[in-house]
Image (cartoon, rainbow, N blue to C red; front, side):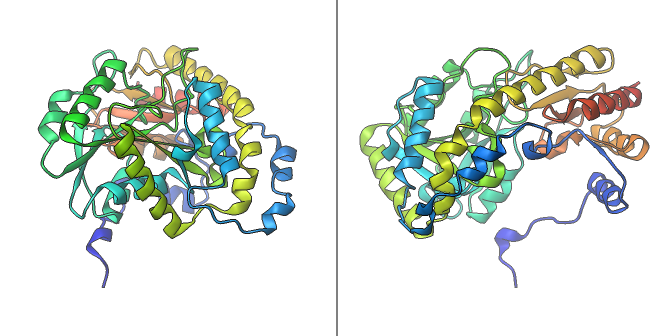
Length: 385
């Protein structure tokens, strides 16, 4: 009765079973995996956000495939102001989410059964998005040696005649590693030589742990490039459902790609008019929210560095919202995560959630409110000792 593309294994594993049981029984958990910024105690300018949805223009329907120009212009202004990068509003296509942006790009590039290279470890959502678009994901490695880097040997080994694109997450989620300039040069060369596209997920680009501004790929001209981001992380407004895809690259092929992407977007016309009209005001929230989030992330990371140094290793990262811990061999990370739930009602992610090699990594969210984070880290320390 159902399509093969939705033939996922839906049986919960032991870890998920324990989480579901505790939550269904009403047990309060110290959640060190929380990724929803609207429930992390950050201060939003609610008056400005609500006022942004009170324009009479919202009663008029003005369908524009790539999105209203005012919203696309606000995105272009962000790249100019925050990243000193010129982006033409005409190269921007609005979507309801980066997930929808991925689906548009996958459909644009791939026939059924074609392949896209993705980093490992990385975010688990890619597998579901690819399945729904009849695309096959092929992993390449991000090894760790005092920092994360692209293993180009595994990239070359993963390439086949059916490869259509290489996906990078800049910075990676959850490793927090930005793509280095020399890595981008190699990827551009591979993509150019093989007529592949580069897909860049930059949702965490603005969350560097230092004052260093990491370059966006939104103006990458050396190969056909699709850069994705959105309000969800940049302005900590996931509920507003606006994201975008920026198309860049050699002029001829980039123009062709943008034209085809516009037809795909015109088929769905998915972004609501009220949200697009409110978008410039919503986007301005990034200035206040990003400073609050950076402060929280750095403080929580400092707690990990000071409290867990004797029990496990906090792996190097340059940005993002997450921390990766490497625990001593002996017990698996899932075993520790399950015991942490059962004995201390504290939730962390074991490595299989992010497709790490091996079973000795835990992932924590650094946007967790300070007091629950400190309490949860203390519980983890007791468990590791």
